Every structure is written in structure tokens, then in C-alpha cells.
Length: 160
Image 1: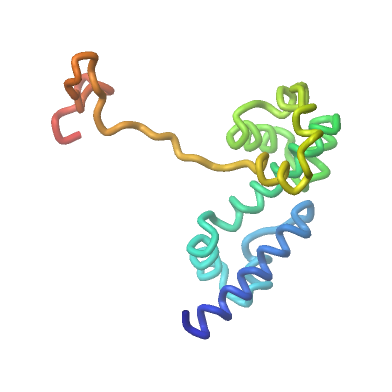
Image 2: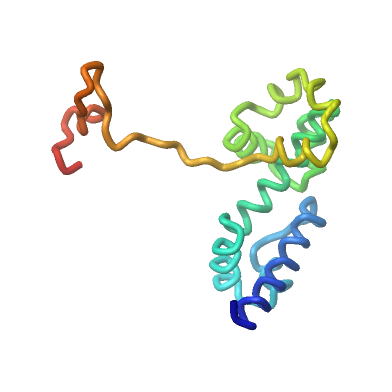
């Protein structure tokens, strides 16, 4: 690793620490890039290469992780939305549902007693929201073991 790459990682870590510490404050990519001493475009590319997600995605994942903790404690959805730095309840609910898979209200109503016996550091890691891409198989396997590439679209040709 070159000296410049190490320096970039130090600056990226500084920006990531900012998000971890000030996730509830109004943050945008430009503000994070300033902390990392980079242009917003360069910062976004470097951040994604280093951490596997965009800076904004990391910020929202951090906010949703905190929101999950507040909802487990019984906070209202609106209070949680405001506490984690989201200004729109609709956008917060949509993003929460996208990442977690259930609405904030449904998550709040779940039984979370199983997490009470788990150390907080383990619980934080285990319940961290993760973005996963939907996997669509390239071929569909029939009951007889044959494959059908066009099974998902009746008008799809062999190259589609």
C-alpha cells in the first residue's frame, strides 16, 4: 500500500467517524468530503471502494441501525425519525422498510426480548441493517432438471 493510499484511508476513516458520531445532524456528501479533504466525487469513489457502500448509504444504514435500537425501547416512529436526523417521516419509513424488510411500526411491535440477554456489542453487530441485492437466477431449473432461460419472460429470446 502506498503512502497516498494510507493517507486516503486515514481521511476516509475521519469522515466515517463523523457519520458515526453525528448521524443525527444534517450531513451530506459534501460535508463528509470536506472532513476527508477530498472533492465530493473523489470522496464518494474512494469511500465506496474502501467500505463497499456509498457515503450516503452508510449514513442511512447508521441512522436505521440507531432507529432500530430506539424502536426496540418503545419510542414512537415519529420521535425515532426526528432523533436519527430524518426530516421526512415518509422517507424515513420507506427507507426503513427497504432496509429492514418491515415498517417501523411493525418492527416496534415485535418481541425483542431475545436481544436482552445478548451483549450490546454483539447485538449491535447482529442487528446492523444490511443492504442485499435481490438475486435473480440466470436460469430456472424445471422439475425434470432441465433449464429454461426464458422462464421469467414469455417473449424473451435466447440471448435475453
